Image 1 (tube, rainbow, N blue to C red):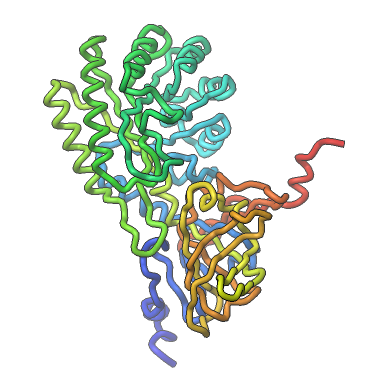
Image 2: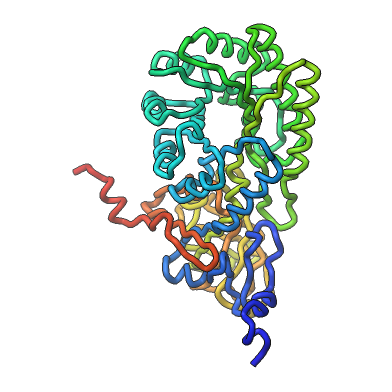
Length: 447
């Protein structure tokens, strides 16, 4: 009998740690090569719930929430729910004291089911239908972000009571990220550009509507941003515009929402987002510009989504086939693919993968992990070092899949969407069940 047998906590301390990003902080490997997440065997979850299977570590999510609270005291944190939304995830955010950002009547309904009061809900999105606005009115949503002149007119006509609104401003700050997720430059579909007077005209139109109360400005630069300087630059542009609004209309607007988009490392060795540096530089810019223009400091809001949930997620697949193409590459095909993770095809997002559930018995070699969809672009990860003896039936774990995987999943090739399983301190809870063929047929109401 060893010390590890006598003292389970000592055994845990002997487990090999994973090399940090992009894995959850608490992820470990046991002696049999299994991944332990939230105190639970991932191989056991795969056996009980099948594959593909999305897993989210609740403890990791709450730890990330605590980091934001500590770095940004006094700042409103609104969870960008498009990253991952279920009633349980929304409840976690409510319990953490956050507000929530929603983009549709559906997302709003989930937030309300999770107990979010209307005043802690922000309705966003570049298009809001009459149904979305009616749902917002029923829920008493605290703020609505306005994104077009037509939307100003629609809300002004449909609002039943005076409604607090934010005007989304495009400051033309290039954050140097993937062009598909850049939203703060002039040549894209979001917001009102500062250049050319669009944003100033939007403010005038809101002030002209008696049932709209302009509470402040909103800005979102894009996604997967690593440059803190971009946020600082945007903050200075927005505060100068707030001063111009005060000078023209005699009203100092009390709120400034800087959006989210904070980068999360997808591969080993990638940099973390400098949250403390962000907090320092944005606050410094806020203080400097407000003093320079004799403005009262507006209340800040930030909207992290991916930053709170991405690294808490791991997706587990089962290997279906291994194909060696001499002189070209080795393909490892799994039982999921772009229907549960379209992000490599959409944005060129790169992932890694790891064999779990058994010890590796061969040296690693680079392979390409592909999915089962009938598309040449259904590639999940390239140049992944997997053991040379990887074979059908093996389990692969892909980290950093907590954000945008569940919301973007589809039924391509008539596949049911995977379940979402939460783990924490050895507890396992299904948040979303696996979608079945019966579910798909039930929606088909034709003859």
